[in-house]
Image (tube, rainbow, N blue to C red; front, side, top):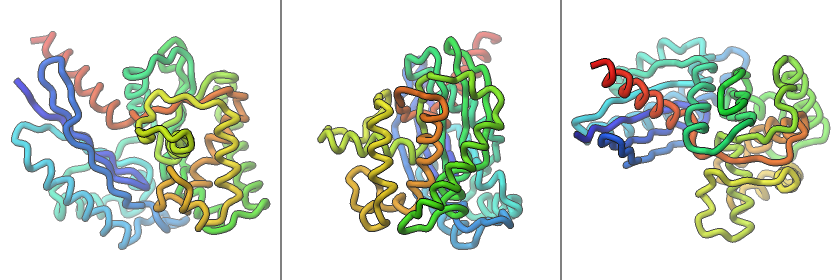
Length: 313
């Protein structure tokens, strides 16, 4: 008996949806949708979702709902992360989503997001010990994995959009701006007491900004499927070289870098400083990239709870 399961992940920068068909043990993705909504744009210190950002997001969600309506046997898990989590006008926005897009979205804490990231990674990559790092638009999740088990996790309220808005010029980035940003990030890492336990471990990198490193490198290597980065490994030196090139470019030059999506060019430096700082902080010798995170984690969570329910029957 085939049924469908869908996850909507409403992030600070993008809205994404994956639909899977589930037939006993066989799980297949049948549809992936992605819209760059930049929901956290200009939230500023008032932490308020702005009208233009909300309108863009609602339009994307209406498109998702139209796709969902094509299936009659579908269950949906729709979650919102950092931007909505931090928003003062969260309730009003979620009400609009319900009224105008017909979707009920639940806001999950950063710790839950980190747990989903862990499930998405550990079920699809052969990692033993690692630090999972998911850099989003307005939050970064860190998970320490030891012997394939989740040991510690934390969600930090910064990401590519809010770091860029707070610290960096959109076009040419000055040495002083970069210095202030990297110092701020280093101090934040210092406040996570268990992070030193990840010393010398590989970093499993998730999130659009981090994945951009892999896409740029794979474009350089002229790999035909440069988007297929799940499990791709990159030595630290390569990551540093790519970052140096991005950091020293102005906006127009960044927009032209193959593998770097144009719509990301104004926030890519802010999006990459956390992982580049983390490499140095942990003296890590490589990054491993994961295509799978929150949405796949929610899928494994769903499959686990179904298995439990079936055993109890």
